[in-house]
Image (tube, rainbow, N blue to C red; front, top):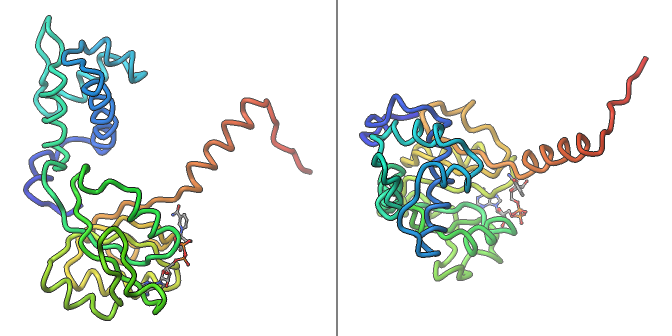
Length: 225
Ligand code: NAI
């Protein structure tokens, strides 16, 4: 990972702890919606199917936040986690590829609630360019350079076919993109080790479910030979 000041501040914290923070954030939001403003680590653990000591350990990485005999102030913890993740700020983001997936992401991800601002959408298809998606006019990729120079987006979401991903990624890295939310099945890290990449493969999650179902069914592997 590149070292921005935020990342440097939490440099020693393991990736698995960081990956759990959005889940804490989600559960805390659920509590706030139910008007619950105080919770013990034991109660939170039960709710999240974790142990109280795991929660204390995780949150201690950032300074604690709980009080002996009181538990956690839900609102305060929610705000703290937002701050740690940086979602109280807004990262300028562009979407490349406004096909089926790109359209679904643009329309259904609540970027503004989780620290991002979708500021540009790009495609090559003349039937798509010029369309309006969530108030953003889809531009042709040929205008990427001018757009990036002017707006300085830091993150790109890739919803383009794998075959086109290498060229566009090289271009985006040259234009200053630091982070990719990559749906394209193209291995960005192999080609650019100095950017942050979150790969999303919906199929991976489904294959894990596949394994679980076969375990439940007691299916056995076919033995050959
Ligand atoms: P799609 O064909 O509906 O959309 C792709 C869009 O990318 C089209 O609008 C096309 O004009 C545009 N495009 C192609 N080359 C481009 C370029 N150089 N610059 C800008 N735009 C360009 O395809 P769909 O279904 O939206 O899937 C997009 C990609 O996402 C595919 O690679 C697919 O395999 C992948 N995918 C990944 C999933 C995951 O879990 N990671 C799930 C579903 C799809």
